[in-house]
Each structure stands twice: as structure tokens, then as C-alpha cells.
Image (cartoon, rainbow, N blue to C red; front, side, top):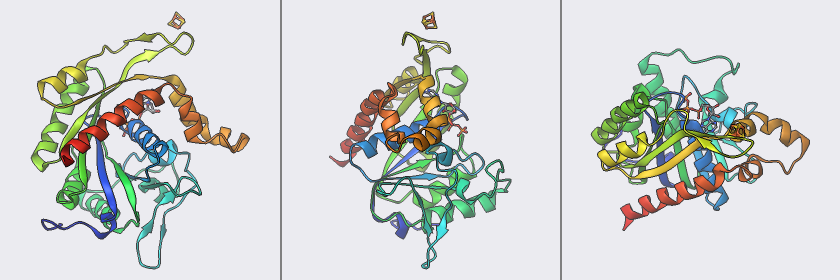
Length: 283
Ligand SMILES: Nc1ncnc2c1ncn2[C@@H]1O[C@H](COP(=O)(O)OP(=O)(O)OP(=O)(O)O)[C@@H](O)[C@H]1O
Ligand code: SF4
């Protein structure tokens, strides 16, 4: 465990660390992490993503990096996978260490904790403006290991909580918020994802699962509300087809494809609000 005031060497050149959390699985935490990363990258920041969801790593798929591997450098640190030759976006995920992408990790707590510690201490991120940490759902061994390792880092800006409008997800998210409060992670705000469905034909938004739960919860708990994100089938499609489109044209990067998606302008506003929340801390 890390002593008070100690920051792992690998994180010392990282200016800001943002944690992405959700109370429940499948609410779109990895999609939110991906879109925050793309938005920050588009604004000229150098970004890293650490995927500590050991049993369900999504980041290789999100960025179309399924064929990448993690390498250990001569000085014993892991070299993250780079999205492209500019090296402005780097990703570290257990998914890069699995021989078969269909495999999943079946580990007991101590082994998971050891892996998280290695990821936090041994990845050579170099200089980064933002490190986004994509966590598993709930409050598991991975979260406790994360809190033990980095709670004293003064470069942690805080946690972004992702929920969906349904009540069950909203009640799960309360547990997540309690966890953040216990380990003293500042909560930057709540995003309500899958908040309505945008029709691909007429762009009308229909609230299939209801909407507004995230805002109500944020108001009740006096936490900033960062906004709602509808289900946009174009986003799912662009993730699924990015490799094929890249093979067809070198200009069809995830970034160029994402900029054409309506969600990109929405995430611009959400990111703006997160940045203003983090600046508020600095003032
Ligand atoms: N706003 C959205 N519009 C369209 N598709 C979305 C949206 N949010 C998430 N998805 C899709 O829903 C699926 C689940 O999302 P995602 O993997 O981000 O969830 P998660 O909370 O990270 O899941 P896990 O519990 O596995 O960590 C993915 O296929 C993703 O592309
Ligand atoms: S919202 Fe309108 S255009 Fe879209 S599928 Fe429904 S009826 Fe058709």
C-alpha cells in the first residue's frame, strides 16, 4: 500500500487523473471514457486510458486495437498501446495481455489487486495531460486496490459517475457515490447515459427508459449534473465498423468518424463542464 503523500513514479508526469465509475454494468462507462478521451484529444491534450476492468476489458474494442499487445521495456515497465503514430493517445488494458480475446480473467481478489497495483506502478505513461481510468462496475477489489494506490496522488481531479435513467441503476449509483466519499475521491459529476433513443431517420429523441433520474439524484446529493447522453445507434455502429472503414480509407480514423456523430458536440459540452469543475478545485 502507498504511504501518505507518495505518488507512483509512473504517474508523476500525469497532470490530471479522472476516474470513470458506474454502479452497474453495461450503462456505458467505457463508451463515456472513450468519448471523453476523443474530446480531450481533439482539444490538443495528450491522453492515456487505463482500463482496470479485469473481467470485462472494453478499451481494445472501443479503439479498434484488438491486435495490439503490451510490451515490457528493458527497465521493466509496461509500454502502453498507442492509438496511432502521433502517440497522443495511449491505452493500457488487461485485454492486450489475453491470447484469446474471447477469454476472460477468473482470478481471486489478491491476484486482481496485484495486477491493478502493477498497472498503476509499472506503466510508462510519460507526460500526459489526462489519464482516464475506466473501472469495473460496482465497488469491487479493483476499486479498493485503486483507492489504496492512488488516493494520495494530488493529480487526481476526481470521479465521473455514469448512470442510466432507470431507478435500479440510480440506486446502485448511490453506493458508488458513498464509496467515493469514503475514500475521499472528489465527485466531479453524474452523466445520465442511454437517456432516450435518437431515431436514425428523423433524429427524434424518445425516452424509452424514462429520463431525469441522474439529474434528480445529482440534486438530492448536491453533486454537479454533467448532462444526459441519448442512445445513438450511429455511435455503436462506428465502434463496430471502425476497423473496416480504416482499411477502406486512411482518413477514416475513429476521430474523424466520431466528429460526424451527434454525440461529439454533446461530449464537447460535458467535457467543458468537467474541465470547469476541475479548475474550480484549483482556484
Ligand atoms: N449513448 C450510447 N449510444 C449508443 N450506444 C451506446 C451508448 N452508450 C453505450 N452504448 C453501447 O452499449 C454497449 C455497452 O456500453 P459500454 O461497454 O460502454 O458499457 P459499460 O458500462 O462500460 O459496460 P461494462 O459493464 O462491460 O463495463 C456498448 O456496445 C456501447 O457501444
Ligand atoms: S421516430 Fe419517426 S421516423 Fe423515427 S422510426 Fe419512429 S416513426 Fe419513424
